[in-house]
Image 1 (cartoon, helix red, strand yellow):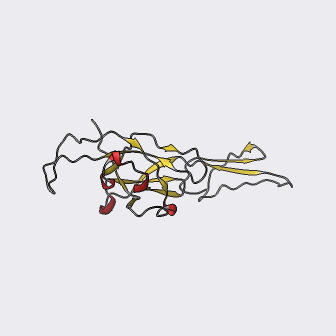
Image 2: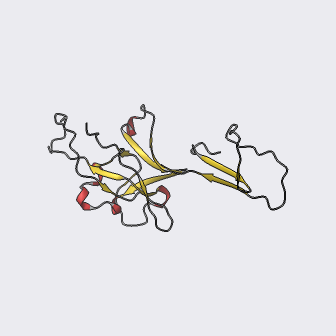
Length: 164
């Protein structure tokens, strides 16, 4: 059983196998017959993954994954109305959708633009945490990026400020 899958379903001839995984394996002990059908269904819901907090470069950021596949954002998919690509943040409270088209499956996270009221490089921190309205933007599998126009790409996406 892969470590990335928290919910797996194993059936033999349509009957659910009820056995615990052992060291990543789900052993099946039985007398096999010609025509037996084994079906393994691995749940692959989209999820946000965070790095260890000591990894400075990506602290406060998350990556989008679905099963073993890591996704990324490409500037080509982001509408200009969201603002500057580098100012985008993912809304962790919003559900992550899945595309319903033909492969590859794309994830549909909600992004917000982190608005900056001051052009200064260093400024007082505002407790308001102002964020622009969100928009759903497709995230593509990492291995497929750079097949369109040149521009920025991002795997580790900052988290949007939580409204309290």
